[in-house]
Length: 257
Image (cartoon, rainbow, N blue to C red; front, top):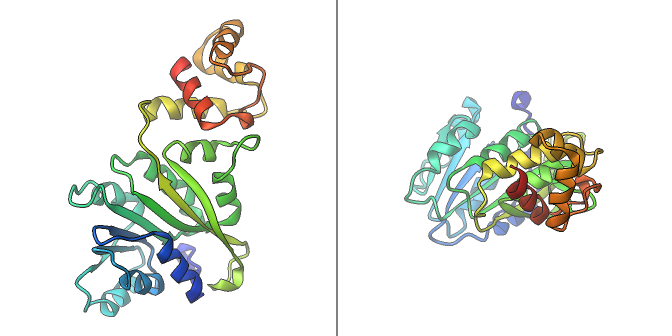
């Protein structure tokens, strides 16, 4: 069962916390990524959610889940890769504005998952993920510890760690600690994602260099002109990317990208 990097969450109090953190309502659809043996699915089934779509990549686990939940019409077990299926599933207008996403995420797909979520036309109202503690902390970082991942995620969602989990909560236990992170989707920005992420890539390409150096290189402008424009929007030209907040990044994206 570990071929997909799975560490199954077994602590029932934590499973209940994850389910409750979604704050589900009768109109909500829940997409569960990697349900495994269905431990979390059982808690989701006890909520008021209108529908649960559980996407499992492992065929053996999928078959077991189908048998386990065959009596519940609200639960759909789907065989496939959530990373490729999310854009198609969430395009369904029947629940596109009222869905939430949850999952105990294998560490090796975490970065890819957040990239997929950031690119969805219809984003979830809320997400609750169990991921590596270090990654969760990076996502929640604020100045003076801003980083590329945090800047990328916080453009479309607020992020909060609600619990740190020891390895003993999993079977088999991972070698690192985990965290439950909740993402609350923000109101869409008037700035296009393309311009914003172009700015993020450029600013954090060499995070130890100054803003003026990184922007001048990416935008093909003189350092003097970049410095002048940064000062005009209230940003110190010789500052470092780690000291930026999301509003600063948005302002830079509007000015240079």
